[in-house]
Length: 347
Image 1 (cartoon, rainbow, N blue to C red):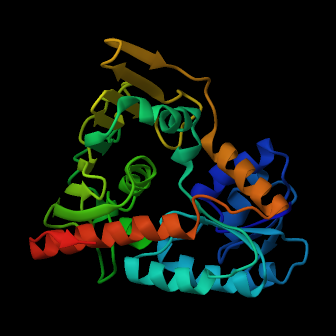
Image 2 (image 1 turned 30 degrees about the vertical axis):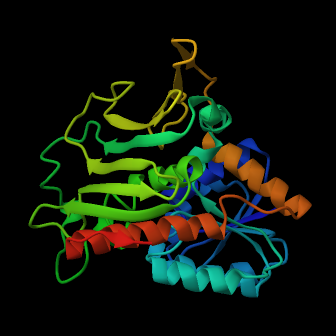
Image 3 (image 1 turned 60 degrees about the horizontal axis):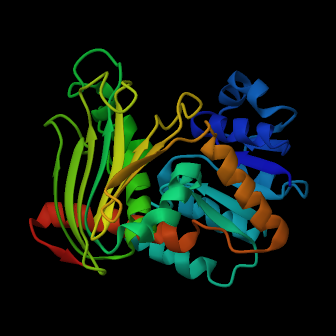
């Protein structure tokens, strides 16, 4: 399967590394900036440069289109790629809102090629083992899902120009992610909430950001799931540089409490998965024992790309796909709505 990447730099470099590991050739990279392509040329192998998306989509050698640009462009690029009848991999979040996501669901209905959204945490061996072991802890009645994005950065985390609008334009953070911590690290954890605990019935939320910012640094939400479980959710820009399971400032975990035990997952720094592997701990009330599961270090980007390529080859359904992408985008919109209105929002 030959790859065409839209967007030179940022997340595309992690995708390119995964494709190289899988020996999947990158044949074209499209970006408005030739300089961005030239800076990272060695990451893309023998790929040609395309100054427009249309030029890439017209290339019959491109089998898979990998969308690695700002979120606000995703929906339009997906539509263009479907017009060219390509397999599509779209980085998260799928769109900038639940409304746009619903439009994309309708557009992709009956599409004959594969479509996958980049929620790579699903592909960690620890995540897959947790799904396998979840029935052993009984009926979940509460869960704590947290993403604290910290780490060494210097200066005041609440006085960062990257989060401030200037000259009448949105901040770089809002421009790239269409929101703050909820859209960035938080969206991955919302995807895992769906994977482990299904659909929510309602949400009550609060968001906060410094006065000079235009994207929230803290999001807090209380979800009631359809299965009765109560989920305490938090996504925050953390001021801590050395907290977390591995002392690198990345403090991200899932804890699910069930009627027969507990399950805990601790995730590693998102763009440095080669440093550590996620950790899984399970407590069983039946045996009164704790079991800790440790896994070899694995690149989740390579694992998700391998799974997607297999779906493209076999024609099977890619997961997470458009339904899972819609799920997260819808929840994010509801969290913002609840915080703005100061009311519980029902799904």
